[in-house]
Image (cartoon, rainbow, N blue to C red; front, side, top):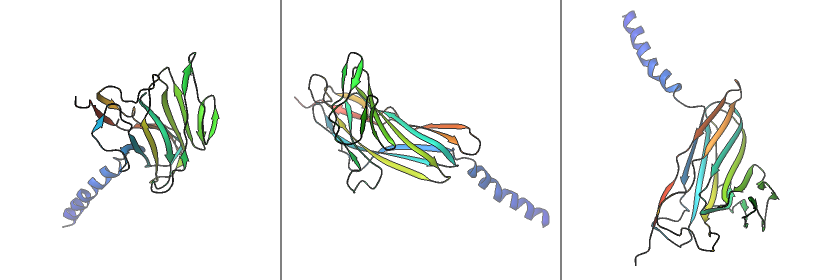
Length: 208
């Protein structure tokens, strides 16, 4: 009987140990929130999406930073780190443009504007290239084990340099390149990273 009890005890503990070791140190996910415009999406129409970015720590972390890049057809209209049913915490309009190999920005209602972009406390937005692609950085900071943080990035279709409303042609498009999180283990100093899936949409040509 004693040997049987020991065998049962070993079997009962084995799956628990395997499950405890299966979580990565840090996870990130991105999804379209319920406020987003729903498909179908047609050429030449303005659409707005709420993208929810969620970061979860499974160990103590420091220097947690999230990066993402949007398609050239898109612009960021606002950021909220609270319940999206409340007013948007950071809401701005801007006019980025490319000249002589550099991107300039003006007409910002809020935030600290400089040559690198626009900063809102832990959030930073900047643009690159002739297509004026928008980049996003969220300086999350330290996170404790089991902690989850989320923000909502409000994006919309922009106009191209000729003044036409994006999207100007039908096909499949990615709204983002895949949000990336980088963090340092607060105990070992080891660096970790994780990437979320890209969000893909289909743009349809209007019926002739």
